[in-house]
Length: 251
Image (cartoon, rainbow, N blue to C red; front, side, top):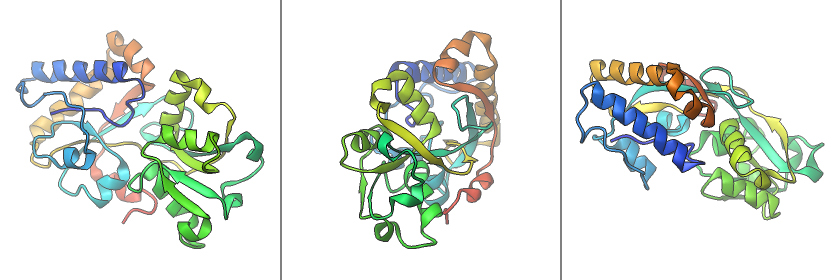
């Protein structure tokens, strides 16, 4: 099974890319049941499934909870803040706080997308916990279930600051620009390896090569360029999972 669940801001584009991947993998000899497209609910169960052929995960769970999967590589994105297969998080607050740094929000309310997110949660752990735990630094730490929800919480003043990866922010600003009104970036994280494309641990070396060559062919095909542009994708790199222990704060 295959899916691209992480940057599904505009589902029509995400599904178009997933269909293109499915079509090309079948031409490479993968069976219909291997390339079945899914929209997973439980992401961790999906990533851990023995039937997984291709999905996009987050670097933090890859390092901490997905020891059995193989890394396929990373897309390169054109979003501001990206560099090749690397990306970063932006710290976002309300416009009235534009002169502050993230450290100036001590005693205020943090909202994160999820506790297993590199870009929304672990980025704070790696930045601030040298001083004290997050729950000691902020007056409250809550979880919204998604980056878009976190931005809305800051806009609605139920939280004061959040962190969002630069690709998600760029896609949300493209498709829902009104949801960023009144918000401002007050800092950024260091670059870190981007969201990994993964496959099940039993995927053979031959199949892994086919997955990588298929993804490279898509991002290099002029006929796919309009779709990739809409998704902010400009390239692909094959990356091994050994690149991910460098994710700040991961153990």
